[in-house]
Length: 195
Image 1 (tube, one colour):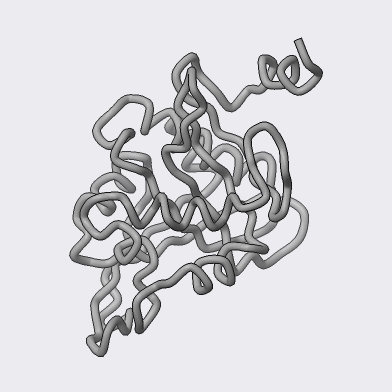
Image 2 (cartoon, rainbow, N blue to C red):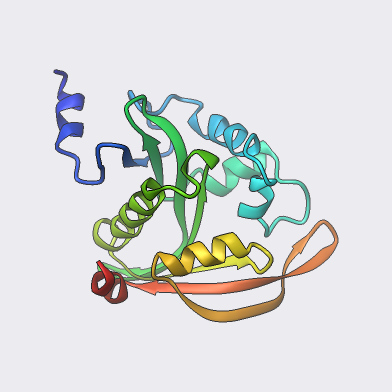
């Protein structure tokens, strides 16, 4: 068994069906190739329900590969894998991180692919993602804005323990139209209390 394989068997952010692992921009490994962000963009675009536009609603034009790379290249990203073939089934990232040590706040983004929708594994990966942000990166509270019309994402956020702050009228400007957003948050303490 290689040193990497052995380390992965001890990795705590996994079950027998899924695993969460951090991606470092430009990192090349058995899990990530040198073109990983490009691959991730095109994989997201292939997903049903116009997923790329739902996940990245803040862009006024169509969200292209260059936009995606600029948006993601320096962000803390975690990637969800489905076992046993380690197929990528989603990712989450932080942006607008402020603060020091364990007193940080951040905004979040997440995208889970169809392979995970409606499964128990989605709950596992989501818990791992929140745990990673809270315990490994020292986030105290995170916020997320979701398109108000994306009811599935809002319902999922509530199921995971996020609280609603409310609607933000005309928050996103997309393709010449203002659209409402819904603002959610979760604290480290509330995450701990429901786990």
